[in-house]
Length: 81
Image (cartoon, rainbow, N blue to C red; front, side):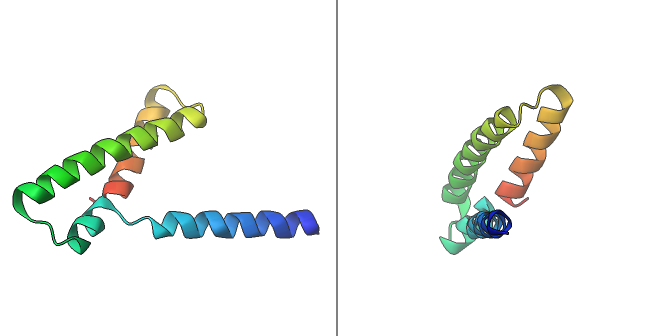
């Protein structure tokens, strides 16, 4: 029972942490960026998210089409397109 409660708590915390991260588009809007500043911010944010998603795919030991699909969806979700 204690193990189940601990696992549930960890899953709840992980979900909260993921929800706390705003997408790149939301961050740009919050910062009230426009024009070249927004383009630059979005480019850097997308590049950072791709690196992060690639790392996650490697941790999951994905390769080939599965890695590509996972990375594309991860980046799309992170950027907020």
